[in-house]
Amino acid sequence: MNAAALLGRLKPAKRERSGPGLLARLRRKRSGDGFDDDLPRAKERRPLSPLAKRLLGAYAVVALGLGGLAGWLAMNAEHTTEAWLAAIPRVDVPVKGAVQAPAPAAAPAAAPAPPAPPPVAAAPPAAVPPAAAAPAVVPPAVLPPAVVSGPVTLTPAPVPGLVEDSRNGPLPRIAEDGRKPWQVYARPFPAADRRPRIAIVLAEMGISGVTTGNALQKLPPTVTLAFVPYAERLDNWVERARSKGHEVMLSVPMEPQDYPRNDPGPNALLTMLPPERNMERLEWSLGKAVGYVGITSTTGSKFTASADAVTPVVEAMKARGLMVLDARANPRSVTGTLAGQAGVPRAFADRVIDRDLSRGAIDDQLRELEAIAKANGAAVGIGAPYPSTIERINLWLTGLADRGIAIVPVSAVANMQKQ
View (cartoon, rainbow, N blue to C red):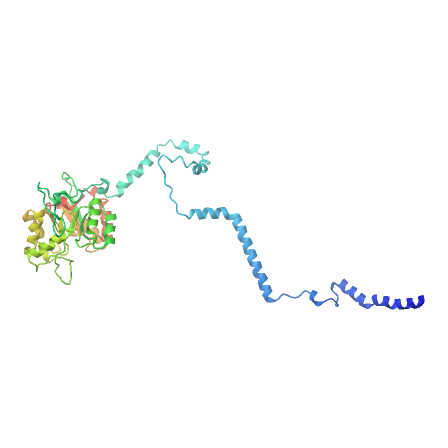
């Protein structure tokens, strides 16, 4: 093959490479397409599906939230820790002799002490000693005078010689040397105190454990407590009351006017029973506890008005060395009168302080007791351990001493009241 023929074959191939296809591709590059129509379509950028867009948006929101949280913690971590620690309940108790020990904790507070020289200059005013003495003066102004005078210890019960064993339990009796339970178990009170006296007796104690516990916790020990003999754990209640300084009586169940519709409790004394049966029931009540000074009854509106029914009870009280509080459940009650005639120590309830449970009504009854005590030398108020009664008694007692009146146990007014 000659050179001319070879050259003729090569020329068309060169024309193909530089033909319009190559120029078109060059034009696409200049115009920004950058892809050849002949390249696979897979290399083209496909639009995102709606699901993918939503996922990307969610990822972006989470990332922004985490980034914001990390930034906030970095800037506020110290304040957050302080607030968390401040929310934890804590009590700092000073220990005698070890006050100097917590120097590390005091060191930061001691750092601002350099500007303390000005306060040191202000220290010369001797106002610091009075400030220290002030707390000691506050309690007497708030607490009832009987509490401020100090605790009174009652004679522990039972006292040997003052107890008689029986099938109903330990019964009170007069000792061989003449000592009587109402005197031995009484809360002491100075006989030389000539101020008008008021005794407050809260009866029906022991029926409710919650109410009884509340009364023992909140009442001052100068208030006399009368427990029902059928209360659960009666011996424990009486022991707790006496350990707190309360004088104690028994509130014996007796027949009311509307018996049997109104049931006063087990083994109540009834006018329809013969004296020996009532004495059995009385001993059942007396044997349930020890350490009481006498009996009363807030239920016996019918029984206490019957001289025939009351006389054996008064004789039993005299034989056992106990006193009687006539609660006057019936205005025609003869209990106090018969007790006085028999030589039994007795007292009368002048007012029921919480017949109306409103605060104003209770306050009125307490003021009437003050007037009676100033006129007659002694007065007795009786009530129940209701929360409102306890509240008003405590408030009333705070100013009683300033008005020249003494709050006393019921034994301290025995035989002082007029018939």
